[in-house]
Length: 327
Image 1 (tube, helix red, strand yellow):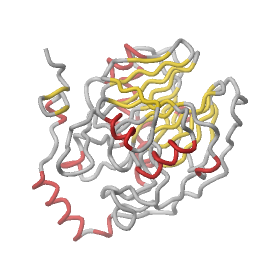
Image 2 (cartoon, helix red, strand yellow; image 1 turned 90 degrees about the vertical axis):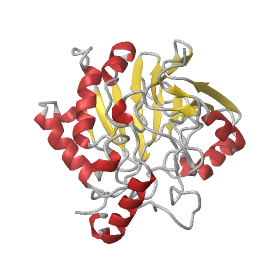
Image 3 (cartoon, helix red, strand yellow; image 1 turned 180 degrees about the horizontal axis):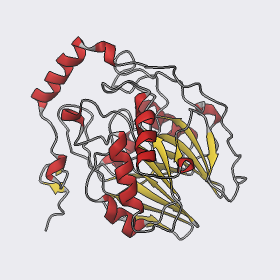
């Protein structure tokens, strides 16, 4: 029997709530955006990048160090293992660098300052997550890195010079007791042109480095599988959760959580392990103008939802680009 997220032409979201909007909806949204450009921007002051505290290879503390580069890109350093998530250093997240959404805050870590990279987690193939320049640059500078990607994304990585690729389907895992990666469900879509939608899979990843457990959620709308991910793969030390690119809801709801849904998803993930202290790390905001909400609105709403849920303030991390925190 074909798995529920597979289709004859590629992949799909199993839940009816994950049905994508069609081309007519996209055209309607584009027309609305052309008339309401004032919505897209900063309601306050853009964040100022801070100096990262990067550890040399093999010298990271027993605690995990996590540094936000921007958007969904993090450098995670645990026990001397250096991991990147959805790397993007380009000025624009688009097929070309002369058009498309431009970076509004520079990368928090200059590319040439990266330590030796051991693992890269690639959640899907959209331009704001799978960046052509960054993939090629990492393949050249860190050829020994092991890339983990959902089904179908491996051939795109290989075409850009990546040598060591492990493709996984949802719930498949790879690695050892010291370093293990599990591919977990997300509610999203894929494609790099109008002609290859959903030809490749999308996912999140659970990363276990010795006694540390980190869930990189990837890109997702809210779905009813968060509780199951928490039961099967938890408890987690860190959950790297998207909070931005959510308006207008009539088109974004199937594929992007808003801040309130992000907190709801976090509570579902942690419900099976209430005795464990888990931190939510906000991502997927403040770097590119992709949708209609003010660029700095997501953390304001996330903090409000967090407090409304009576969760401890210090368990929600809203980081500045370049900021490093220890878990």
